[in-house]
Length: 325
Length: 114
Image (tube, rainbow over the protein chains, first blue to last red):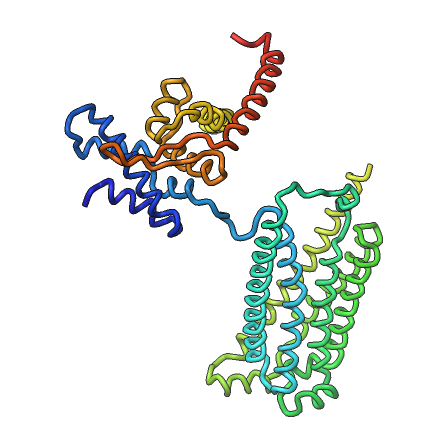
Protein backbone atom coordinates (compact mmCIF):
# COMPACT_ATOMS: atom_id res chain seq x y z
CA UNK A 1 0.00 0.00 0.00
CA UNK A 2 1.22 3.48 -0.81
CA UNK A 3 3.61 4.91 1.76
CA UNK A 4 1.85 8.24 1.71
CA UNK A 5 -1.55 6.67 2.33
CA UNK A 6 -0.16 4.70 5.27
CA UNK A 7 1.45 7.80 6.72
CA UNK A 8 -1.71 9.86 6.46
CA UNK A 9 -3.70 7.05 8.02
CA UNK A 10 -1.28 6.86 10.93
CA UNK A 11 -1.66 10.58 11.56
CA UNK A 12 -5.40 10.90 11.13
CA UNK A 13 -6.43 7.81 13.07
CA UNK A 14 -5.33 9.65 16.20
CA UNK A 15 -7.52 12.63 15.45
CA UNK A 16 -11.21 13.16 16.18
CA UNK A 17 -13.63 12.22 13.38
CA UNK A 18 -14.45 15.81 12.53
CA UNK A 19 -10.92 16.72 11.60
CA UNK A 20 -9.92 13.53 9.86
CA UNK A 21 -11.13 14.03 6.34
CA UNK A 22 -9.95 17.58 5.89
CA UNK A 23 -6.55 16.97 7.47
CA UNK A 24 -6.09 13.86 5.33
CA UNK A 25 -6.96 15.75 2.19
CA UNK A 26 -4.64 18.61 3.02
CA UNK A 27 -1.75 16.38 3.99
CA UNK A 28 -2.16 14.31 0.83
CA UNK A 29 -2.00 17.39 -1.34
CA UNK A 30 0.92 18.95 0.51
CA UNK A 31 2.99 15.77 0.72
CA UNK A 32 2.51 15.02 -2.96
CA UNK A 33 3.63 18.55 -3.81
CA UNK A 34 6.68 18.13 -1.59
CA UNK A 35 7.51 14.80 -3.22
CA UNK A 36 7.32 16.32 -6.70
CA UNK A 37 9.65 19.06 -5.56
CA UNK A 38 12.03 16.56 -4.02
CA UNK A 39 12.14 14.52 -7.20
CA UNK A 40 13.00 17.68 -9.13
CA UNK A 41 11.14 16.86 -12.33
CA UNK A 42 11.99 13.16 -12.47
CA UNK A 43 9.58 10.37 -11.59
CA UNK A 44 9.27 10.19 -7.80
CA UNK A 45 10.66 7.05 -6.21
CA UNK A 46 10.06 5.51 -2.79
CA UNK A 47 13.28 7.13 -1.66
CA UNK A 48 11.92 10.59 -2.45
CA UNK A 49 8.70 9.83 -0.65
CA UNK A 50 10.54 8.49 2.39
CA UNK A 51 12.72 11.60 2.56
CA UNK A 52 9.70 13.87 2.47
CA UNK A 53 7.80 11.87 5.07
CA UNK A 54 10.75 12.01 7.43
CA UNK A 55 10.85 15.72 6.91
CA UNK A 56 7.20 16.07 7.89
CA UNK A 57 7.98 13.99 10.95
CA UNK A 58 6.71 11.41 13.42
CA UNK A 59 2.99 10.78 12.77
CA UNK A 60 2.25 10.68 16.49
CA UNK A 61 3.96 14.03 17.01
CA UNK A 62 2.20 15.57 14.06
CA UNK A 63 -1.15 14.31 15.28
CA UNK A 64 -0.51 15.77 18.71
CA UNK A 65 0.08 19.16 17.09
CA UNK A 66 -3.30 18.94 15.40
CA UNK A 67 -5.09 17.78 18.46
CA UNK A 68 -6.79 20.76 20.03
CA UNK A 69 -8.13 19.37 23.27
CA UNK A 70 -6.62 19.14 26.71
CA UNK A 71 -3.91 16.52 27.08
CA UNK A 72 -4.20 16.00 30.81
CA UNK A 73 -6.80 14.73 33.23
CA UNK A 74 -6.45 17.39 35.89
CA UNK A 75 -4.94 20.73 34.96
CA UNK A 76 -1.93 22.13 36.84
CA UNK A 77 -4.17 24.65 38.55
CA UNK A 78 -6.07 22.05 40.49
CA UNK A 79 -3.46 19.33 40.67
CA UNK A 80 -1.99 20.37 44.01
CA UNK A 81 -5.40 20.63 45.60
CA UNK A 82 -6.24 17.21 44.20
CA UNK A 83 -3.14 15.54 45.60
CA UNK A 84 -3.43 17.12 49.04
CA UNK A 85 -7.15 16.27 49.22
CA UNK A 86 -6.40 12.68 48.31
CA UNK A 87 -3.66 12.40 50.90
CA UNK A 88 -5.79 13.84 53.68
CA UNK A 89 -8.82 11.68 52.88
CA UNK A 90 -6.83 8.49 52.70
CA UNK A 91 -4.71 8.99 55.79
CA UNK A 92 -7.67 10.01 57.93
CA UNK A 93 -10.35 7.54 56.85
CA UNK A 94 -8.38 4.36 56.25
CA UNK A 95 -7.22 3.81 59.85
CA UNK A 96 -10.78 4.40 61.02
CA UNK A 97 -12.10 1.85 58.56
CA UNK A 98 -9.48 -0.65 59.65
CA UNK A 99 -10.42 -0.10 63.29
CA UNK A 100 -14.13 -0.51 62.72
CA UNK A 101 -13.89 -3.60 60.57
CA UNK A 102 -11.40 -5.22 62.89
CA UNK A 103 -13.47 -4.68 66.02
CA UNK A 104 -16.68 -5.62 64.26
CA UNK A 105 -15.18 -8.84 63.00
CA UNK A 106 -13.61 -9.68 66.33
CA UNK A 107 -16.70 -8.94 68.37
CA UNK A 108 -19.90 -9.47 66.47
CA UNK A 109 -18.40 -11.73 63.87
CA UNK A 110 -16.46 -13.84 66.37
CA UNK A 111 -13.65 -14.28 63.93
CA UNK A 112 -10.09 -15.04 64.95
CA UNK A 113 -7.50 -12.30 64.64
CA UNK A 114 -6.01 -13.52 61.38
CA UNK A 115 -9.29 -13.62 59.55
CA UNK A 116 -10.40 -10.32 61.02
CA UNK A 117 -7.16 -8.72 59.90
CA UNK A 118 -7.68 -10.00 56.39
CA UNK A 119 -11.21 -8.61 56.32
CA UNK A 120 -9.91 -5.31 57.59
CA UNK A 121 -7.23 -5.24 54.91
CA UNK A 122 -9.85 -6.00 52.27
CA UNK A 123 -12.12 -3.26 53.53
CA UNK A 124 -9.27 -0.75 53.64
CA UNK A 125 -8.33 -1.61 50.08
CA UNK A 126 -11.88 -1.34 48.81
CA UNK A 127 -12.59 1.95 50.56
CA UNK A 128 -9.23 3.27 49.44
CA UNK A 129 -10.03 2.52 45.79
CA UNK A 130 -13.39 4.21 46.12
CA UNK A 131 -11.90 7.32 47.67
CA UNK A 132 -9.27 7.58 44.95
CA UNK A 133 -11.78 7.05 42.17
CA UNK A 134 -14.46 9.45 43.36
CA UNK A 135 -11.98 12.18 44.32
CA UNK A 136 -10.32 11.97 40.93
CA UNK A 137 -13.63 11.96 39.10
CA UNK A 138 -14.89 14.99 41.02
CA UNK A 139 -11.72 16.94 40.37
CA UNK A 140 -11.80 16.09 36.67
CA UNK A 141 -15.40 17.29 36.40
CA UNK A 142 -14.73 20.44 38.41
CA UNK A 143 -11.68 21.16 36.29
CA UNK A 144 -13.60 20.88 33.01
CA UNK A 145 -16.52 22.93 34.29
CA UNK A 146 -14.52 25.73 35.84
CA UNK A 147 -11.79 26.09 33.25
CA UNK A 148 -14.39 26.29 30.50
CA UNK A 149 -15.76 29.44 32.07
CA UNK A 150 -12.81 31.52 33.02
CA UNK A 151 -9.98 32.33 30.69
CA UNK A 152 -8.80 35.26 32.79
CA UNK A 153 -5.81 34.89 35.06
CA UNK A 154 -6.93 33.94 38.54
CA UNK A 155 -7.12 36.93 40.82
CA UNK A 156 -5.45 36.16 44.08
CA UNK A 157 -5.28 38.43 47.07
CA UNK A 158 -2.33 38.43 49.44
CA UNK A 159 -4.68 37.38 52.28
CA UNK A 160 -5.02 34.02 50.59
CA UNK A 161 -1.36 33.24 51.02
CA UNK A 162 -0.72 30.32 53.36
CA UNK A 163 1.33 30.72 56.51
CA UNK A 164 4.91 29.64 56.15
CA UNK A 165 5.41 26.52 58.23
CA UNK A 166 8.49 26.85 60.34
CA UNK A 167 10.95 24.03 60.57
CA UNK A 168 9.86 23.13 64.04
CA UNK A 169 6.14 22.95 63.40
CA UNK A 170 4.11 19.75 63.53
CA UNK A 171 1.31 19.50 61.02
CA UNK A 172 -2.12 19.03 62.57
CA UNK A 173 -2.80 16.18 60.21
CA UNK A 174 0.19 14.28 61.56
CA UNK A 175 -1.09 14.68 65.10
CA UNK A 176 -4.60 13.53 64.19
CA UNK A 177 -3.28 10.43 62.46
CA UNK A 178 -1.21 9.64 65.53
CA UNK A 179 -4.25 10.00 67.75
CA UNK A 180 -6.37 7.85 65.47
CA UNK A 181 -3.83 5.04 65.60
CA UNK A 182 -3.45 5.31 69.37
CA UNK A 183 -7.18 5.04 69.88
CA UNK A 184 -7.27 2.11 67.51
CA UNK A 185 -4.50 0.37 69.43
CA UNK A 186 -6.13 1.02 72.78
CA UNK A 187 -9.50 -0.20 71.62
CA UNK A 188 -7.92 -3.41 70.40
CA UNK A 189 -6.25 -3.96 73.73
CA UNK A 190 -9.35 -3.16 75.71
CA UNK A 191 -11.18 -5.95 73.94
CA UNK A 192 -8.59 -8.23 75.48
CA UNK A 193 -9.64 -7.46 79.04
CA UNK A 194 -11.37 -10.62 80.19
CA UNK A 195 -14.48 -8.92 81.48
CA UNK A 196 -15.02 -7.02 78.28
CA UNK A 197 -13.86 -9.89 76.19
CA UNK A 198 -16.55 -12.17 77.53
CA UNK A 199 -19.19 -9.67 76.75
CA UNK A 200 -17.85 -9.01 73.31
CA UNK A 201 -16.51 -12.29 72.09
CA UNK A 202 -17.63 -14.89 74.54
CA UNK A 203 -16.05 -18.18 73.77
CA UNK A 204 -13.17 -17.24 71.46
CA UNK A 205 -9.86 -17.52 73.29
CA UNK A 206 -8.02 -14.34 74.13
CA UNK A 207 -5.03 -13.52 71.99
CA UNK A 208 -2.66 -12.92 74.87
CA UNK A 209 -1.51 -15.71 77.14
CA UNK A 210 -2.42 -15.75 80.80
CA UNK A 211 1.18 -14.91 81.70
CA UNK A 212 0.67 -11.61 79.91
CA UNK A 213 -2.55 -10.81 81.69
CA UNK A 214 -3.35 -8.75 83.53
CA UNK A 215 -0.37 -6.65 84.46
CA UNK A 216 1.57 -6.58 81.25
CA UNK A 217 -1.62 -5.88 79.37
CA UNK A 218 -2.46 -3.10 81.78
CA UNK A 219 1.03 -1.72 81.21
CA UNK A 220 0.39 -1.92 77.50
CA UNK A 221 -2.77 0.12 77.82
CA UNK A 222 -0.92 2.68 79.92
CA UNK A 223 1.77 2.92 77.25
CA UNK A 224 -0.82 3.48 74.56
CA UNK A 225 -2.52 6.10 76.70
CA UNK A 226 0.81 7.88 77.17
CA UNK A 227 1.29 7.75 73.42
CA UNK A 228 -2.10 9.29 72.87
CA UNK A 229 -1.12 11.92 75.41
CA UNK A 230 2.00 12.71 73.45
CA UNK A 231 -0.07 13.07 70.30
CA UNK A 232 -2.42 15.44 72.08
CA UNK A 233 0.61 17.37 73.25
CA UNK A 234 1.72 17.60 69.63
CA UNK A 235 -1.63 19.06 68.75
CA UNK A 236 -1.59 21.46 71.67
CA UNK A 237 1.97 22.72 71.35
CA UNK A 238 2.03 22.61 67.57
CA UNK A 239 5.79 22.56 67.41
CA UNK A 240 8.99 20.83 68.40
CA UNK A 241 9.65 22.68 71.60
CA UNK A 242 11.90 21.47 74.36
CA UNK A 243 8.87 20.20 76.29
CA UNK A 244 7.69 18.23 73.29
CA UNK A 245 11.02 16.59 72.69
CA UNK A 246 11.48 15.71 76.38
CA UNK A 247 7.98 14.22 76.48
CA UNK A 248 8.68 12.05 73.47
CA UNK A 249 12.04 10.97 74.84
CA UNK A 250 10.59 9.96 78.18
CA UNK A 251 7.48 8.21 76.86
CA UNK A 252 9.27 6.42 74.07
CA UNK A 253 12.16 5.30 76.26
CA UNK A 254 9.74 3.88 78.84
CA UNK A 255 7.72 2.23 76.07
CA UNK A 256 10.81 0.74 74.50
CA UNK A 257 11.99 -0.60 77.87
CA UNK A 258 8.52 -1.98 78.49
CA UNK A 259 8.47 -3.84 75.19
CA UNK A 260 12.01 -5.07 75.61
CA UNK A 261 11.12 -6.43 79.02
CA UNK A 262 7.92 -7.99 77.71
CA UNK A 263 9.70 -9.72 74.88
CA UNK A 264 12.53 -11.12 76.96
CA UNK A 265 10.80 -11.96 80.22
CA UNK A 266 7.46 -13.29 79.15
CA UNK A 267 7.03 -16.58 77.43
CA UNK A 268 4.69 -17.30 75.75
CA UNK A 269 2.98 -14.12 74.70
CA UNK A 270 0.32 -15.61 72.52
CA UNK A 271 -2.31 -17.64 74.28
CA UNK A 272 -1.74 -21.35 73.59
CA UNK A 273 -5.48 -21.85 73.42
CA UNK A 274 -5.66 -19.22 70.76
CA UNK A 275 -2.85 -20.57 68.64
CA UNK A 276 -4.09 -24.12 68.89
CA UNK A 277 -7.47 -22.94 67.73
CA UNK A 278 -5.83 -21.42 64.66
CA UNK A 279 -3.82 -24.58 64.21
CA UNK A 280 -7.03 -26.56 64.14
CA UNK A 281 -8.76 -24.20 61.83
CA UNK A 282 -5.93 -23.93 59.33
CA UNK A 283 -4.61 -27.49 59.81
CA UNK A 284 -1.15 -25.99 60.04
CA UNK A 285 1.71 -27.00 62.25
CA UNK A 286 4.00 -24.94 64.38
CA UNK A 287 1.53 -22.10 64.43
CA UNK A 288 2.52 -21.38 68.01
CA UNK A 289 6.19 -20.98 67.18
CA UNK A 290 5.49 -18.82 64.14
CA UNK A 291 3.15 -16.61 66.12
CA UNK A 292 5.69 -16.20 68.91
CA UNK A 293 8.47 -15.33 66.47
CA UNK A 294 6.15 -13.00 64.63
CA UNK A 295 5.27 -11.21 67.82
CA UNK A 296 8.91 -10.83 68.74
CA UNK A 297 9.74 -9.45 65.33
CA UNK A 298 6.89 -6.98 65.56
CA UNK A 299 8.12 -6.09 69.02
CA UNK A 300 11.60 -5.35 67.70
CA UNK A 301 10.13 -3.25 64.95
CA UNK A 302 8.09 -1.29 67.46
CA UNK A 303 11.14 -0.69 69.63
CA UNK A 304 13.20 0.57 66.70
CA UNK A 305 10.35 2.83 65.60
CA UNK A 306 10.16 4.26 69.12
CA UNK A 307 13.88 4.92 69.19
CA UNK A 308 13.76 6.33 65.70
CA UNK A 309 11.06 8.70 66.81
CA UNK A 310 13.21 10.00 69.65
CA UNK A 311 16.11 10.62 67.30
CA UNK A 312 13.82 12.24 64.75
CA UNK A 313 12.32 14.50 67.38
CA UNK A 314 15.73 15.71 68.52
CA UNK A 315 16.82 16.34 64.96
CA UNK A 316 13.72 18.37 64.19
CA UNK A 317 14.16 20.28 67.42
CA UNK A 318 17.73 21.18 66.50
CA UNK A 319 16.76 22.16 62.99
CA UNK A 320 14.06 24.38 64.39
CA UNK A 321 16.41 26.08 66.80
CA UNK A 322 18.95 26.79 64.08
CA UNK A 323 16.28 28.18 61.86
CA UNK A 324 14.93 30.52 64.49
CA UNK A 325 18.05 32.52 65.19
CA UNK B 1 27.66 19.61 28.30
CA UNK B 2 24.73 17.80 26.72
CA UNK B 3 22.45 19.56 29.18
CA UNK B 4 23.75 22.96 28.10
CA UNK B 5 23.17 22.15 24.44
CA UNK B 6 19.60 21.18 25.21
CA UNK B 7 19.08 24.39 27.19
CA UNK B 8 20.35 26.49 24.33
CA UNK B 9 18.27 24.72 21.74
CA UNK B 10 15.21 25.16 23.92
CA UNK B 11 15.75 28.87 24.43
CA UNK B 12 16.42 29.42 20.74
CA UNK B 13 13.22 27.56 19.93
CA UNK B 14 11.32 29.74 22.36
CA UNK B 15 12.70 32.87 20.76
CA UNK B 16 11.72 31.76 17.28
CA UNK B 17 8.33 30.47 18.37
CA UNK B 18 7.13 33.97 19.16
CA UNK B 19 8.23 35.31 15.79
CA UNK B 20 6.84 32.49 13.66
CA UNK B 21 3.21 33.59 13.74
CA UNK B 22 4.19 37.12 12.79
CA UNK B 23 6.32 35.80 9.94
CA UNK B 24 3.48 33.61 8.70
CA UNK B 25 0.91 36.38 8.85
CA UNK B 26 3.21 38.71 6.98
CA UNK B 27 3.17 36.34 4.01
CA UNK B 28 -0.53 35.66 3.93
CA UNK B 29 -1.82 38.96 2.61
CA UNK B 30 -1.74 36.94 -0.58
CA UNK B 31 -3.09 33.36 -0.58
CA UNK B 32 -0.57 30.55 -0.12
CA UNK B 33 -0.85 26.79 0.15
CA UNK B 34 1.15 24.97 2.81
CA UNK B 35 4.26 23.97 0.98
CA UNK B 36 4.40 27.21 -0.95
CA UNK B 37 4.36 29.14 2.31
CA UNK B 38 7.02 26.79 3.68
CA UNK B 39 9.35 27.60 0.78
CA UNK B 40 8.59 31.29 0.96
CA UNK B 41 9.45 31.40 4.65
CA UNK B 42 12.62 29.41 4.10
CA UNK B 43 13.89 31.68 1.36
CA UNK B 44 13.09 34.69 3.56
CA UNK B 45 15.33 33.33 6.26
CA UNK B 46 12.66 32.07 8.70
CA UNK B 47 12.61 28.31 8.13
CA UNK B 48 9.72 26.46 9.75
CA UNK B 49 9.23 22.68 10.05
CA UNK B 50 6.50 21.22 7.89
CA UNK B 51 5.27 19.35 10.96
CA UNK B 52 4.92 22.67 12.78
CA UNK B 53 3.54 24.76 9.95
CA UNK B 54 0.61 22.66 8.76
CA UNK B 55 -1.07 22.23 12.17
CA UNK B 56 -0.33 25.87 12.97
CA UNK B 57 -2.12 27.06 9.83
CA UNK B 58 -5.08 24.93 10.78
CA UNK B 59 -5.14 26.31 14.31
CA UNK B 60 -4.93 29.90 13.10
CA UNK B 61 -7.84 29.20 10.80
CA UNK B 62 -9.92 27.73 13.63
CA UNK B 63 -9.16 30.86 15.65
CA UNK B 64 -10.52 33.02 12.85
CA UNK B 65 -7.19 34.56 11.94
CA UNK B 66 -6.98 32.86 8.55
CA UNK B 67 -9.45 31.89 5.88
CA UNK B 68 -9.03 28.88 3.62
CA UNK B 69 -10.24 27.81 0.23
CA UNK B 70 -9.84 24.52 -1.61
CA UNK B 71 -8.56 25.30 -5.08
CA UNK B 72 -9.62 22.48 -7.39
CA UNK B 73 -8.92 24.13 -10.72
CA UNK B 74 -5.27 23.08 -10.91
CA UNK B 75 -3.89 19.60 -11.64
CA UNK B 76 -3.90 18.86 -7.94
CA UNK B 77 -6.42 20.20 -5.40
CA UNK B 78 -4.77 22.53 -2.89
CA UNK B 79 -5.89 24.29 0.25
CA UNK B 80 -5.03 27.97 0.11
CA UNK B 81 -4.78 30.13 3.24
CA UNK B 82 -4.88 33.86 3.56
CA UNK B 83 -5.54 36.50 6.22
CA UNK B 84 -9.12 37.05 7.31
CA UNK B 85 -10.32 40.51 8.29
CA UNK B 86 -9.57 39.70 11.92
CA UNK B 87 -6.24 38.32 10.75
CA UNK B 88 -5.34 41.64 9.15
CA UNK B 89 -6.08 43.41 12.43
CA UNK B 90 -4.07 40.87 14.41
CA UNK B 91 -1.18 41.22 12.00
CA UNK B 92 -1.17 44.97 12.49
CA UNK B 93 -1.14 44.62 16.29
CA UNK B 94 1.55 41.96 16.29
CA UNK B 95 3.69 44.06 14.00
CA UNK B 96 3.33 47.06 16.28
CA UNK B 97 4.25 45.02 19.29
CA UNK B 98 7.20 43.55 17.45
CA UNK B 99 8.54 46.94 16.46
CA UNK B 100 8.20 48.28 20.00
CA UNK B 101 9.98 45.27 21.42
CA UNK B 102 12.82 45.20 18.92
CA UNK B 103 13.49 48.90 19.31
CA UNK B 104 13.71 48.43 23.07
CA UNK B 105 15.96 45.40 22.72
CA UNK B 106 18.13 47.18 20.21
CA UNK B 107 18.77 49.90 22.75
CA UNK B 108 19.45 47.44 25.55
CA UNK B 109 21.90 45.40 23.51
CA UNK B 110 23.67 48.30 21.78
CA UNK B 111 27.09 47.58 23.18
CA UNK B 112 26.99 43.82 22.64
CA UNK B 113 25.70 43.61 19.09
CA UNK B 114 27.97 42.68 16.28
